[in-house]
Length: 53
Image (cartoon, rainbow, N blue to C red):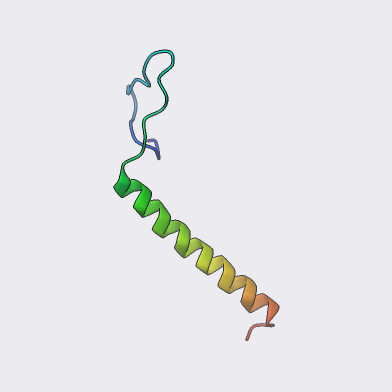
């Protein structure tokens, strides 16, 4: 399973062809997941710096 689309047996194209682009929906999901991850990381670091609140 690929995170950027395609799957087993999916040709990448001939010489000079770039990889397939992810769909806008997939990009949106990864942006939301990344934002939640950054928020959790930042809140953890702030909690450690402030000695547990």
